[in-house]
Each structure stands twice: as C-alpha cells, then as structure tokens.
Length: 310
Image 1 (cartoon, rainbow, N blue to C red):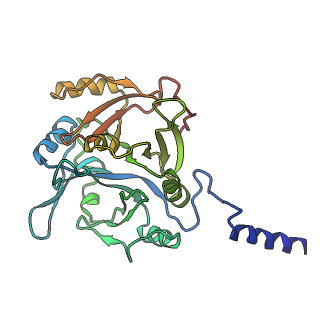
Image 2: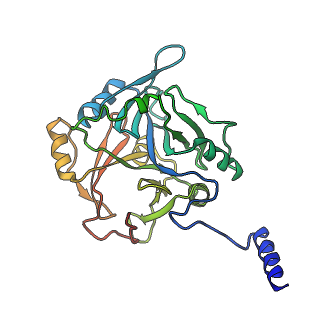
Image 3: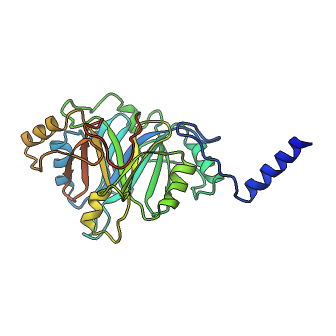
C-alpha cells in the first residue's frame, strides 16, 4: 500500500512540474541516438575566389567536390577538414547586412531515430529525413534563436564516404573543427533544446569580466566537440555577427600555426591567451567570419569556472 502511494505521488508531482529529471553528462536519453560531433559549418560569401584563397591556399584545405543548383550554377562547395568535418561555402551573400552564417550541422549515427525522437519531444521536424544531393541523409530544424541546425548521417556511396581517406593535405592548418559558435538571446530556451532535449552539457563558461557570463561551451553528448553560446549581443552589426558566428580549429601549437600562416602571406595579430587560459589566434575570412585557432589545453587557469576535461 505504501509503495502504491509513493508511485501515485511521484506521478502527480511529475504531472504538476514539481519533478525535473535531466540526464547526467554522457547519459543518452531514451530514444535519442548518438550525436557525435560537429559535421560542418555553412557560410555565405559574395566573393568565392577570395574564399577559396583563404580556406584553400592560406588554411590549406582541399576542395574535393561541389554541388550545382538544379537549374545550373554553383550551389555550394566543400573544403575538407577531415573525413567527417567540412566547411561549406555558399556563394549567395546578397548584401552587407545579411548574416554570413547559413547553418551549423552535427553528425548522428541514426538520422531517422533522431528525427522521431525530436518529434516526440515537441520539436518541429520534417515529415522524414531528406536525402541530400551529396548522398547523405539529413534534416534541418530551427533553434529558439532562429539558427538553422542540421543533423546529418553519412551514408555509403555519398560524396563524403566515397572520399574517405582522400583530400587531406599535410599542409592543413588544422585537422579538426573543435567547436562552432552562435549568438544566443534566450539562454533558457536554448538550454531547453540543446541541453534538455539533445543532451549537450556545459563544460565551461566565462566572460570578459569575472562576474558576467558571455560564453557557454556546450559539449555534444557523444563526442568532444562543442557548441559555444555567444551571449549578451543585442542588435549586432554584420561585422560583429562574423565574430560571433564562428568556427574554431584545434591546433597543437598556435605559435607554429601563426608562423605558417605568415609564410603563406596571411597577416594577422600575434596569438594571445584567452580568458579560458588557452593560446588562440583569430583569423577572418574575406566576409569577416572568424576562424579561431585554439590549443587543446589551458596554459593558465581559466577564468570564471572550472573547465571539464575530456
């Protein structure tokens, strides 16, 4: 009898919102397949050749394939970071006020299961995953801030899988996109999607001042990459958005990367230690999108909060 009352009271409390269950970091919610890392970032440009010079010549990434629009003309081209990560460039920037960020994307191992899981959580999803023109399965959602967030499953025979092990030159400035950053206006709403539903979890937060949180690093649930919330941005200019909507490339030694870039003709300020205690170097593509080079471990104590190790 006592057990029955405990069950009844627990169910009543849950229905009234008095109980709040959140999976611990690394614990996968029932029904959600693995989300293993950043797959790509999609960026807009109005100068494709300048983008090719930056991502191809200066950063050293090869361009293994591209996709044309159904009616003709280039839709997008791909710069390969590694077998599972790309920088996608869309020659569709219309004016200086348009956001350079097209979308961010994360890799999953089961796109159909993820679509069904998100639908069950009340997230607006398409009726079924889409087979992209690159041969992979994907679907797109919008997060609470209106960012396009894609999920992709690499499929046998796709442009990506057919090129596994290829187009990864030794001269790449980095072989890993370690995080992508997006502006967040409502952290509570963002947390509900990324943390409570998708299973991301915070591994560090900090700011320009010790008592203000400007950035929150949210690690994917089944890998080491993370999404960086860029907070406290109100009506940012297009140039500021280029700083906030960014990608970060992991490098073992920022100083050596800096010297390599200089040898390729790229001019920038010298590396600095960030508020997270890591050596980093900010680069900018021709349309002012930031590509941040970052070492894996802090060399100084991070500000503001403890940093979770891998």
